[in-house]
Image (tube, rainbow, N blue to C red; front, side, top):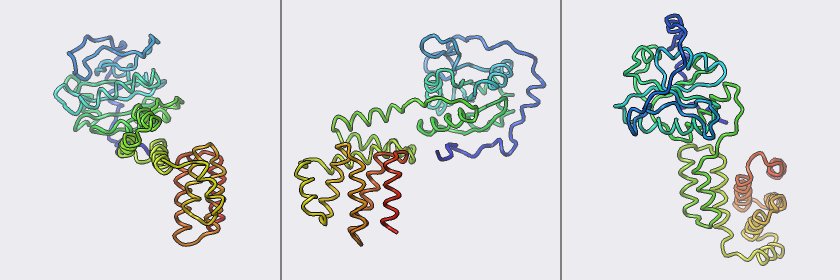
Amino acid sequence: MSDPRITSSIFTRGAVDLGALRAAQTPAKPAAATPPAGPGVPGGTPPSTPPGGGGGVVVIDVTEATFQSEVLERSLTTPVVIDFWAEWCEPCKQLSPVLERLAVEGAGAWVLAKVDVDANQRLAQMFRVQSIPMVYAVVGGQPVDAFAGVVPEAQLRQWIGAVLKAGGVSVEAPEDPRLSEADEALISGDLDAAERAYKKILSDAPSDAAAEAGLAHVALARRVSGADPAAALAAAEASPDDVPAQLLAADIEVLSGQAEQAYARLVDLVRRTAGDDREAARQHLVSLFTIAGPDDPAVASARRALSRALF
């Protein structure tokens, strides 16, 4: 995975020194549940726990008095993400609910610690918070990364995944609900809706392999729309040098679960053609690779065959 961090880490520049804060604090009790401050107000809810009553807190309000126990000490065993917010901050009202939802989804794999900057100005100063929302990750008692502002959910998921990896946590990332909706549209045959959904995901996360595969599948479905599979395969068999016929036959083979046969067909076509025909066959084959994904053993084998055919 490419580096998921949204901004370069300020910690590499030594901007945060927690030593003074540790020294000034006395052992603190764990944060108690606080009553709601009002509907729709970030940080105004009691500590949240994962569904099912597992008992592990996933969203907590933190003050300077509880920072030692709820953030630093807790981060020795569980990654902690700190959300610096304020009631008057409109962007905070966009980001905080997403962070809270993802924390609940994480089911205790990480903890969201919410810090009201107005009520905890010393904490904000210690972390050099100049604008909010500001989000920090703390692992093993030390800050490891940070970003400022509102970011797309897809990038936020990637960033949290990197935080979990830094904390040695191995968890299966929850599936992006937008991807499920796009897949459902594809399966139902609503290709326009599926295409829009996959493109929206890619606009937020350009390297999302699942969305790339879905978009390639939409293109494949459009290419074979209205084709008679048996007739198309017969036409390709009768005219081995007919490039469009070979491309359509490969598409049908992929949809029929015969991807390896489709790859072999197009590799052979690349080997036997030149110029624009060869490039068309190569690009078509690469698009079929995208559908399967880079980890498919058949794709790896076909890529090696394609390389030999080209060079």
